Image 1 (spheres, helix red, strand yellow):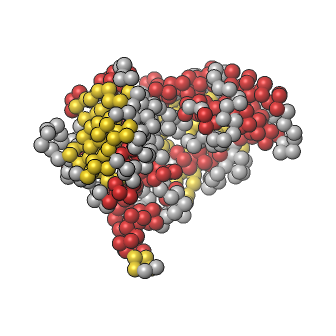
Image 2 (cartoon, helix red, strand yellow):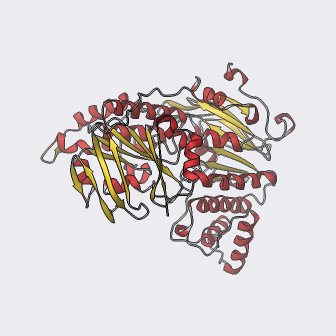
Image 3 (tube, helix red, strand yellow):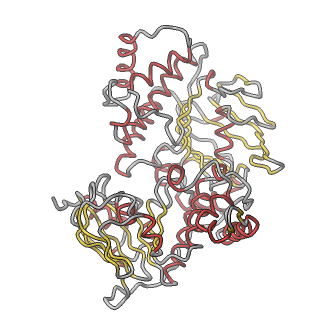
Length: 527
């Protein structure tokens, strides 16, 4: 089937021909230094519709959202909201004054402020910076707003005491409140733009947020959901629009599309499984890292071995301890009991420096905060482990480091391959490939991965899977901690399941399926 030929099917709650779109983007274009990021893109979102925006990293999704939010200015095109043309450039507040609100991936919440303070300050900031806040009436307004969407959160609660899904739901409610204050002089349906809102949520909590989106839909508002999780998008949207290389590939009704259809639109080819060798779970295979009754904040009395040439998956429910394990093994979190053995050396007080000297590396879950310096260039980030190898006194051999960084980018297909770009300007998938490539350049024996494809598109996921399988075929060992069952099915030779910090089961080879993982994760664990 040629999916590009059916690019603009109608759909949603009603036929597009009988509705005035709440958002109608026509021929939007944007270039950076002569490189086209968007090429004549169209996007229509109907009233009362949950609409998915999909595409591989670097396809133009983020550029489009940032234009709507006022962060970038479009080079050309037209934008209508509820039938009214909005003059370009949009200005720093984007489409907020037209009833379009935004929730970005980092949620934009201040940890040491209360829910009430966020809702009140957003509301008053939109109206007057000099108006005195009536805290009693604001508490009532905040309570009513939270209750309207069945968000069970105390307005007096500090943000850092909330669960991840509660924070996401508060961010959505805050955006709705800001939407009401901004758009009160503008009639018509409102639109909430959610940019990867579930990327840092435990899988079992995603449904809670998606239920909130349906409540918005029921009251006639629209949602634009940007996500890399195809199953999530297919389950929660009415239509999807796909971009590829800055161009519109098409829009489809979700209920008439399969996962394979959408993958073909995103990548231009059908989804294929990554080939991998058969791992022999034998006692004579060299053990590269072992844990002996280790305990941390959540992990309790855990023992296991990680062997050469295998990918060992670790999973469980949120709070089970799997999220903590990579940092615990790496010495980034302190061991409260037990020991870790690497290269036949037992360590009770490990540190990152000591583990790295034993050829163990870590790719952290939060690549923005912990994996790289977002404000530095690509070459500066990729050169950090090697600066001492290319320096003499105070002088650094930047030319050699630049060549090395360029080779890493080419080998791992990092796009764009310009090592002088600021690292933070790369898409999530390309950042992750660059980080993995940097640490592979150190020739590690053990790689610890924590949610390695979180917020990464399907194309980059496939490249990362292929890369990981290639490294273990050469004898390296990989530990991958993740809540993504599909990732474990694709990559892992063995999977251990944690419950309440303890080992609750193990699956090997063909036993590793999404159903068996879910059954193991939700089975009664050790206490």
